Image (cartoon, rainbow over all chains, first blue to last red; front, side, top):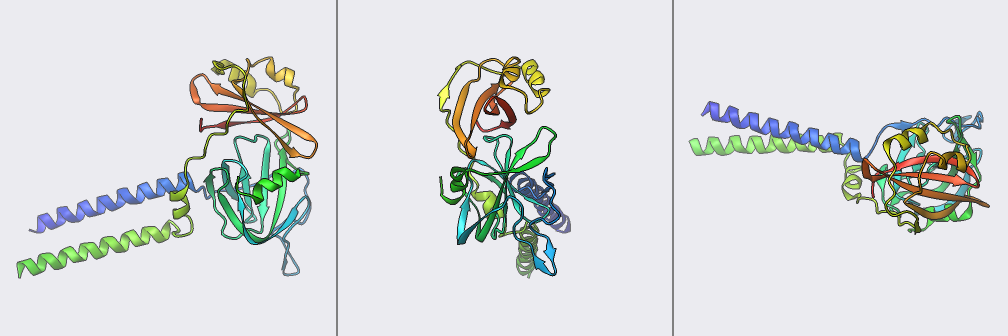
Length: 156
Length: 133
């Protein structure tokens, strides 16, 4: 009787360990938690996410600020949403090499892989910076076109 | 009596198992991320705008040579080590007035992976591997 209970207990624990490992594996694969460190070409002292006299800096050089009033922001292409070290979301797509989009001010941020048109977050005001990779590996803030920003605002 | 003991020990296992599953759920940051992970469908394939060379695959030596070419090189320099691309993706205007052309090269040793190369004007801007095709 004791032996049976022990065997059953071991089976339960083994099952749970396997389940935990599987969940851990899925979590890592689908929702990357590592932060992105963007090595910017234009190094301004103040960046979004900094504090100035106790007040939060929301936008900086190159940010286009758009009033969303709590509405959703959509993945402009199939791609990946990660977060940077200032809690902004960094969106990249293998279909658009050499470019990144930094999205600050989002609530309900959704990290991980997304199909085109998926909701990646919501915001009262979103601050979008468009970054282009330089030959030295740094990211330069560049002027975005209207059509590229419109892709974030409409479900495509 | 024996029945009652068996039933209560079964209940204990059930409660313990439930508590552990709940703990795993909390550790995995549910409901913040897990439903998103579960609801994420495989991204859809971006259609080619125009197929250029239907049976074109990039060989391993070609890829090795390509990866040594610095960004900012001319399109001619890049294409000297490549063959014709499989297809061209729809043009984009990421920056105003600058057309981004994107060419796709499936890899010979892994045809479901495409090398996507982006050009702006005559300049090679960058590449990425797309794993979904």
